[in-house]
Amino acid sequence: MKILHVAHFFYPCLSAGGVVNASYQIASNQSKDNDVKVISSDSCKERLKFPNGRYDVDVNGIKVDYFRNLSNGFKLKTMLDTPLAAPFKIRKDIKDYDIVHIHEHRQTLAILASYFARKNNIPYIVQAHGSVLPFFQKEGLKNIFDKVFGFKILHNASCVFALTEVEKEQYLKMGIDEDKIEIVPLGINLEEYEDLPSFGRFRSKFNIGESDKLILFVGRIHEIKGLDLLIDAFNDLINQNSKENILEDNSLEDNNYNIKLAIVGPDDGYLTELENKIKEYSLEENVIITGPLYNDEKQEALVDCDLFVMPSKYESFTTSGLEAMACSKPLVLTKNNHIHDWVDGNVGLACEDNKDSLRESIEKILFDEELSLIFAENGRKLIKEKYKWDIINNQILEIYNKIL
Image (cartoon, rainbow, N blue to C red; front, side, top):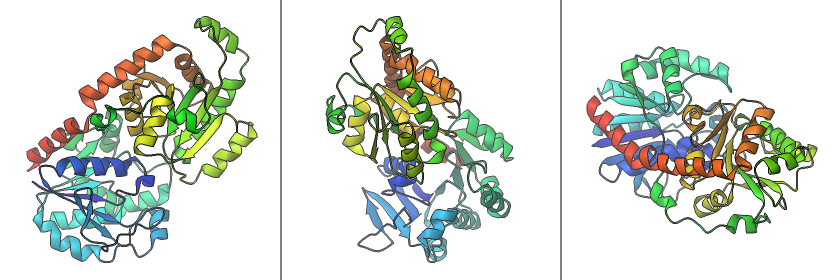
């Protein structure tokens, strides 16, 4: 099968978030047995640079065309590419493909790819990755985009992919026929988590004691991730007066430890505010901000933590949460995360969007080793059964074939 993926950010621009990893993993898995190409832009926080120019770049075995944007700054402010060469290249090349898979639809390359796909009677799929409805940031621009392009892109798609039932409902609100909606989750490559780093490497690097309790956040340092709420809850956690009662309730005799919070990820405009909030509470000794970590270094953090936390104000899926589950770690996340329904009481706890509820959920798992172990074992098992990329890729290919 000849498959064209359209992604306005692509690997190696990992700082752009989970969509980059998802589109890369899908294209990578498909390229093993299919003719796959990705079209993207050279945009990132700093413009991507390639020695062979903007076309025909090989990214770990995936053929990628990176179109140069006229303005990288304009793209970052508006999410709209300015790829002057793209219309000519896409118009010429799109005829060679059986199907087009668009990742996020509010972008210039999606406009071009959907238009030329329709002109050539080539079916295309839209995978919004949590951005179906126009809210949270740039709402005005998103509404304008939808009126001019967005509704047409969605409604003319042969199929749309929803990550969860919540996102399916969002498509329905946008007027998409239910029979066009397929629920396709994200996944991980479980084989990458078979030979994990030994315990203690991350702790050693950041002066965290072996017996210390370690809470971990992995993601972009962005306002939407709820890090202000996490710092509020963490401050209450370590300063509360009821620690002795908690330890007694859970039969923990040794209280010779500290509670640490590690925040791992690239700055996406919120680092200064986060650092100010940490200073406001005088938490500098308890909160570690590492910057982005990838591959083995990220696994070291996951292996060494006691609990993974994602306190987002809005989150369609949590790939880093899947990675924590693969490392046998329990989760705590807010009910703003669309996956909270299968997380809560199964692989972790889902809390309300307030600091007391978040603190209580963290506390419950952090000081209950039996409960933590149950959640950890359930998480690893669930990854094997449902959230592996090869399973998900087979599902996607079946949908492609059904459309064709």
